[in-house]
Image 1 (tube, helix red, strand yellow):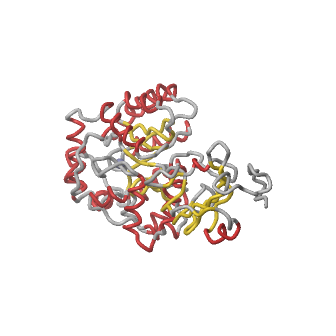
Image 2 (cartoon, rainbow, N blue to C red):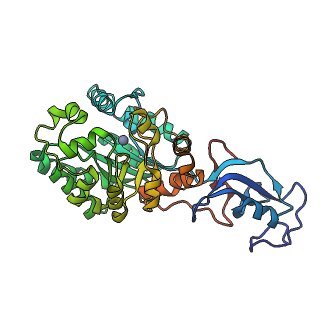
Length: 402
Ligand code: ZN
């Protein structure tokens, strides 16, 4: 019996036992990068004479058992899918100790860590090694050092975006910082290589970048068709700062935001009004949101990056998964930095999201987020595994299967 036009070594399907036979690999979730990820599914493969395996179908386990009754049933995996994408991290903070606590205290700790000269290439190198060891092949990294930018853009076998971070809360500085950023981008773009990471822009957050600078950076991103990423709506203090100009974040950053004038709106509405959402940034955290915010994000077509462990460590609200799902917003997963996350493993982030959302988010939806949501956040073509492709393109998350 021939199967779906896939050539088999035995030609007519009379496969010698233990030789070039077929196998069915069941998984709690299987995903080939096309459509939705499937629960209680499996991948049917054909063993090749060279010892490799070729995918012949990905479908519900019961259906594959029926179609391929002679296939050897392999041990069940939790997930069979392409490698997940880490859509948000800060590799140059890889020497920062894990610092759970209040968001405002964490911000102070990050600033102190940077001032102590502990961000930079050496830390990013360590972070990069950890990311590679986690099985990730695509990453969205926020970069604050030119040497790190050069290093990431030269990295072989790693895709994604190196987002140059811009901070500048004083509107008086906007013009100068915009000019500086434009100049830097010219340099960075010349370092890009086909197949490698791309250059992007990361205005840090709606309260650490002045309104004229936010507008200017969004304009630069649109002009140059560069990916854009911002931290938004991460803490209750951020919402209060934007709505009333007071609260714990104002107290923490007071000296740094002398001329802060609140818009009176939510951070998301503020970004929409400035025209920033129109540049389709990926929006990181997004836990302090209401339905109006989510509607704005859905209308703009922005991808939201969910970092559940970082949010948990910094006492942020629970990410409103069901609200985003109801509005059809694509959600990606990111680990954030080692300062607020115990490691850079997206599989562990996926596990944390499962535990956090329980029945509200299925493991299959979360696999979709970790793979395709991440690819969308970074403007990458999502990996796909179809009939005829090597089985090795799919990974058994947390454990090698090949
Ligand atoms: Zn971050």
